[in-house]
Length: 298
Image 1 (cartoon, rainbow, N blue to C red):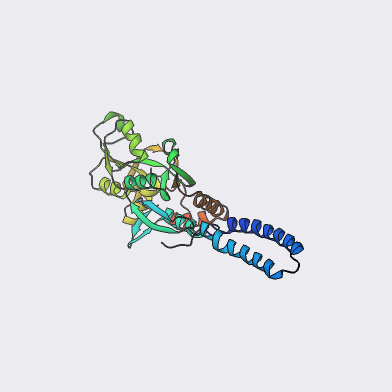
Image 2: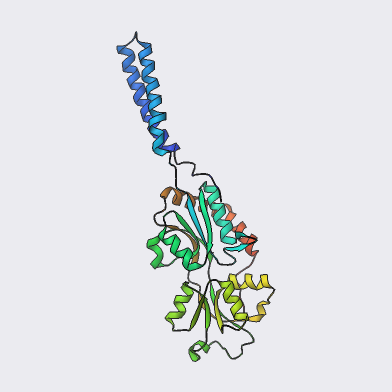
């Protein structure tokens, strides 16, 4: 994705320095005019030298501009995924809008499974990652933009599995739960000593549950709704036996060593998009007027 560099990378510093130099040169000019009333050519040379100094000596200091961003999108339908060989999704549209309106240049835009996307963004300066849950043990690695979306994780079974009830997780330790590898949901299930199978994305979880390869799946409400809609599977096929978590939201994250002008520009643009209603427009485009109650599966 191409873009333009951050507009203010040069202007403010150059203007400030130029103003100081011009004021200084004017003072010099006044003194020279008194002492050299009959030497206008010399005074003109002083002014020409001052302009030469500003244009050819000061400007190269800022000529490098800002670094470009590397963007990492988690493979997470409907927030970020590939369709017709393009990266798309709710969060993708939001991030594209942020970057374009901020005038930031992007060198690469990747879609990857969560473990790789998280590792690359956490360890590489000037990297952006979406969509990520904000939690205390990640604070030291990132600057944050958001929240961009609420988050609820369901523990879901096929309705036809009458042998699995709400209290089955306490009674049957041999039940296998599909969950996204490296996710907060996986951490939660493992801490409860629940048997899990880690997979690369929530679509894979969705398919594995339908195929009977897992007994349950830990999946976000948006992802369950979106995958069912795209594949033509009725939501009545599924039954929620537990809400694992709804205490955290999704964010955009920037590596802690990202240039602060980039961070400030994106955070400012996000605030503007929030106030103007642009964020809501993108949400409606992807989710319609889908309310929390409509995303419930009984």
